[in-house]
Image (cartoon, rainbow, N blue to C red; front, side):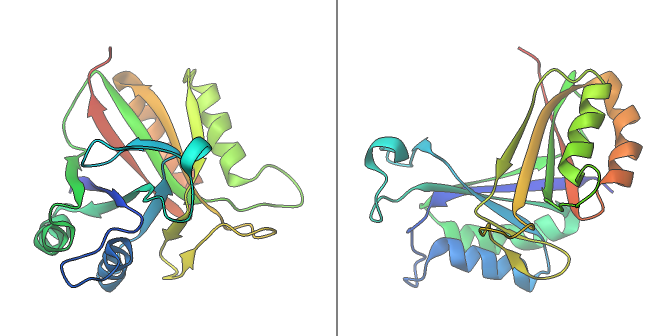
Length: 202
C-alpha cells in the first residue's frame, strides 16, 4: 500500500476557530492517531497574506514564524485525517497530501529520523549520508526540526546535550536509483521513516 505525505504549513501563533494554538492542536490530533510527525521552522517565509518573515532581521517573540508539520501515513489514515485537519486549519494555513506511488524521472527523498550518537563509530546520520554518497547522489541536506514524534510516543525537541534531536534529511534521487536505495534505507532507518516525492527534473 502506497504511503502518503501530509504537509501542513501555518504560523507558529495561528489559532483554531476555538481560539487554541493551531500547531499544538494539530500535534494532538496526530498523537491521537498515533502518527509520527516533525515540525520545522522556516527562517525566511511568506505567509498566507504574502507577508515576509525573516528571522535574521525581525525574528522576535511576537513574529508569527512559518512552521511546517510533515507526516508519512498510509492512505486510509490520510483519508481519516483529511477532514479534521481541514476543520482545524481553515484559512490559516496550507494543507497538501502527496502520494508516493506515482512514477517520475526523479524523487525528493525525505528521511524523518532522530540523531542517535555513539561513542565509537559513525552515527545513523553519518551512515545515511555515506550511503547517498556511495550512490553518487549529488546533493543532500540535513535540517533540525523543532519537534518530532515517533513510535515511542514521546515528543522530541532539540536540547543542549540531548542526542535525540529530530532531523529531516533530503536529497534528489534519479528514478533508476530508487529501487536500489529502498532496501538499504529500510535496513539503516531503524528509528524513523522515509518518503519519495515524485517530481520532474528541471
